[in-house]
Length: 153
Length: 83
Image (tube, rainbow over all chains, first blue to last red; front, side, top):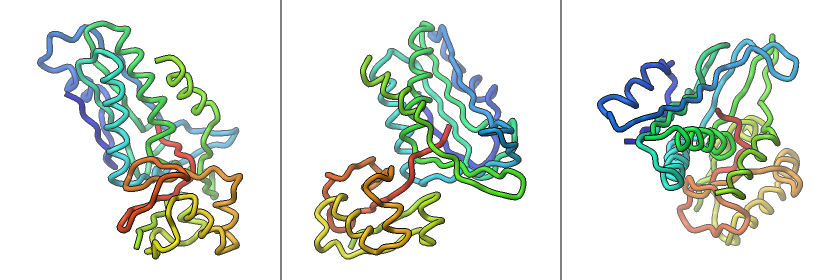
């Protein structure tokens, strides 16, 4: 069973993983990625982060990315949770958790999902550095990471 | 009519989050970008040829060739930065 959630409330990554693998003894591997709010960016100290999104499209885009991973690899379950709204340093922003029978599929699918999420899902970060605020720019590295999956299925 | 939505930096710089627009003369998203550019100032700068603009029609990622139909929800936004 796959699950995708976008929420302003904090979440507990450990609890999400417990739920992902509950009552399924066929699972042999779980791989998780947890994205955290860093307290610095481009040499500046960041106090707070605000995450804007496009309600409706965000959930749809995340479901499509998970479906694509499901089609590429043999997976048991995927779970994606993403925060929106106000975040503080060390807060989990995103969790991608993938359960499969064997580790290889879970590793690949987890990386695939976060790479796609970063370039396709409509979220935008605005960071507060002291008394100023700025929108975070997209990174060229993230585009390259996605292109890798397109050339090598 | 089509429903236009703007997000993040675009919404902030344009000072508008949504508007209704007559679809007449707009057969695809490329036409829409030209129309918005003609408004000048911030519009011309944000939607200039060399700017990276992401677009969605009815909540699906789209490009300049994507056709427009009456009643469509069209969103314009800067490259995404989630995760």
